[in-house]
Length: 232
Image (cartoon, rainbow, N blue to C red; front, side):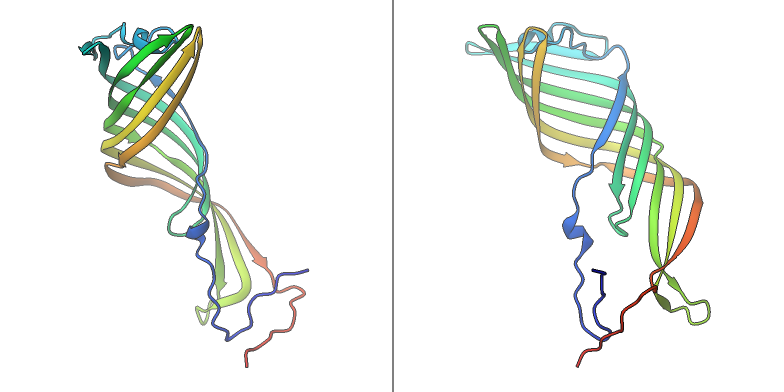
């Protein structure tokens, strides 16, 4: 059947769209600069702490019979991220392409060992984005109820759909992320697991460079409208 809205004059509570928000997938491709911490061959355990660049510090100390490895490195990452998002205020969907350039300090430490052909490594890691410059390019879909030109009141069942594109600049300073990780490897194969404990989004400054409307279309939903019911 067809959807029928609530009768006019009824005090009807509509659901809050934010209660049904789900995380949307995002993919990113990054090219780190040379000179940071070189992870070397794809294997876990202490072999991950053998190579160093000029922007990397590594050390292994013994706590009793247990070796504890620590690493700190600075990287300059050029990234390209693709993904979808839902606006927190208007709940409008959008597709976003974001090229970015950032300087990050990564610190991690943990313990590892070998069991047969398998190598295990686990510990704590932190990433500090010292500064990052991003250029989000967003294509957004907006749906709004049309208003009457004379009374400036919403017209029932008449909507306008807009497709917009915007380009902005985002400057992020001191973004922090803390988590734990574990890795298991056997030969050339490595299985990694990460879990975030705490995150600070940092200080974000944003400027809008361009905003353009690509399409606008009105949709009339008054066709075959059933009789309006009223409340007693």
